[in-house]
Length: 376
Image (cartoon, rainbow, N blue to C red; front, top):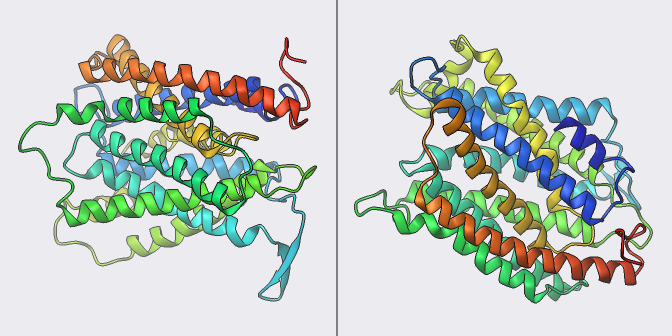
């Protein structure tokens, strides 16, 4: 994964090329597969497995993922954002982009815990993932419509991308047809809807900001995705650290089984495998690079980038389940997973058609410096 990330961020592949896109997809796919397997292995209650509580594992794995991101952006100096204009705030001169990248990082700090909270609700993991993935696919398409209306995005969303959205939503929603009568009533639960609303608003704001940054770069100005990622991660980590400290020193809940109590015990009474829990979270941190760079991929619409990101994670989830079955005695993917996979491949077909058209368009407009072989 680290070799793939290094290759995707160097001149070995051209910025904005289909080759770079495939590198990022494969890196995200690989990191997501490893992350999915480690989550299952660490939280499985079967004999011979750590049997770590989900909240406890998520605390340690989030630390591990965050450390990977912080070490890279600080060690490599990515935080030196390449800006084309400066502004003054609080008596300091700074890149004007910080005024919206920092809020994007705060939104990231909201997305991470609300994702965790969605998994802690009394609904299946697959249903939680369905709701979250579908919402981001829809949000990405809406953001394109908004930014086209605002005159920020000057590219049109291809028919093939819209068709891909339809099949992706069908793929993501397949799980909902297997909900049994009497299952958790998500829509009429105030806590669940508050968590979901926070997740969608924060993620939508973040995707809007990513695309605003991408679509407002002056002609000839480099799109510094690494700088954006670094500032966003620093803001996100600072926010989560502040909130985490407040939660740790908050009044201990009366119930020892409450998520807050479990969170506090993860530090006050650490699990015997806490170090390995942190290590197990590192692939998640690696995946964050690929995920952000896919969302911000040069020359592509939010619709396309959002679809690529979400579909990659859907396929990775199925592959992780298969590997767990063959390697660790897990369960085979369910019927709904296989049906979903069929619709995913149909959506990918239409995305491939859209990518071919977009690449040709970028070459014609001289936005792509190194066209793929066979295209002049």
